[in-house]
Length: 374
Image (tube, rainbow, N blue to C red):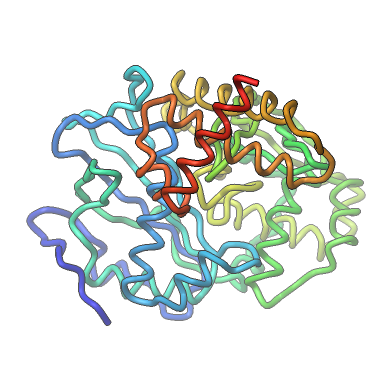
């Protein structure tokens, strides 16, 4: 097993102690990293792509086969990566991190394979998170969500209601569009997909979602919508805030589904909600969260998302054939590249983030600019 060049010494960071490591049969676990830059640094708004890439590179250095599966696997992704939480500042068209500040970053494992890799990785983690020439020193690594298993989640006490806090933009795919609403069927379907993929205790999707649709109600909510650049291309309109879901009296007459509802509610902080969870979206917590925990969208992030959407629509209007998803996909990736270039990112950095050849990225920018002039 390859060793990292930089080791984390006890004088520079607090890592999980031997007493806090977890059983080898754990399938679910969450870590929180406390990070700080060595000096004031500026990040481009889509820095979450870099965090995602850094995590996969750590996996690749020890287990290339697992890394390839996490990168290319067509099933649900068995991990989540958050955005940074803390006092982020707007700085022109970039995000500013202060040297004197500390920032939190969450990573979770949703399968026994990833949890075991994470447990071994913690024996010799690196000293810094390398993020586009902005190294973030790792001051501490602690448990954010306790090690557990799907079987243990299943055995938890059945709930009649649960409050979930969506601390980063959350959305769903719905008939070719983004749905920025906490519709119970969409919310719990997103959890069930992960459950059926990784728990080895699958449930019939249609039957459970029919029960959710008929017996799960929203008792209260406080949500707001927000637009954000998401993943490697495009933007989405998502929501943040709190929602209380409750089981109707009739719904409690189906104890197995009520038990599954409870297990999925407890799974939510590990797996996140909706799509793009490996890129920081859909971060979810149980119960009420203080306002400073919310992953706020800075003006520059909103501006980038708006520009990507604007460019996508302009480029789509120049297409001769707009049917199907291919035209939209092509225009969206070209819009993303051009918008990021307009915001000051180098083509080399964009190509690296998107894992595309530099010449292809350069060509896409030229084609997009030519289309804008047409």
